Every structure is written in structure tokens, then in C-alpha cells.
Image 1 (cartoon, one colour):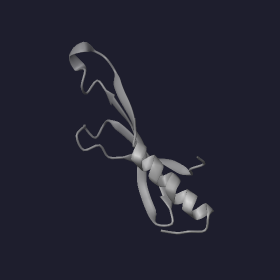
Image 2: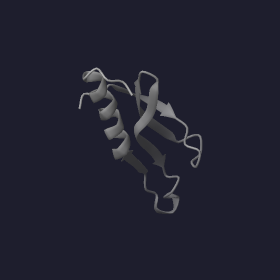
Image 3: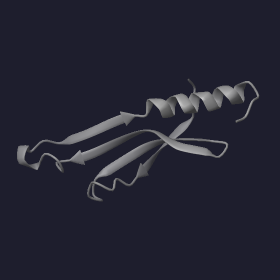
Length: 79
């Protein structure tokens, strides 16, 4: 899929504001949503072990939704 998206800094409400979160945002014809996100937790969850942690997630259903929107546009149909 050729999905045009952009990474944006986001708020992660369950982690301190010092931690970093970014989201991959799909934005096409008024339909705007996150497809994936990455969090850098640092030692927030692992202070006792002195380990650095991070995570990355992809919303498979959101990825398919973005593909469906683009496919309909490609065929001249808008939902």
C-alpha cells in the first residue's frame, strides 16, 4: 500500500510527560486517525532493573481502513 502518513508527537496519558510518544497519522479527505504508535518509556516501568524500555504497535484494522479509503479513491468512489 502507498499510504501517505506523517509521524506526530502525541500525549501518553498513562506515562509521565517526560516520556516520548509518536503516532503515525493517516489524513485523507477529512478522515484522520492513528495507524501506529511508538513509545519510549525510558526506565518508567523498569527502574528496579535499570533497563530502558520502549514499544511499537500497529492497528491492523486501521491500516486496512486507510487502504480501503485509498482504494475507493483510486476507483473514483468516495464513502
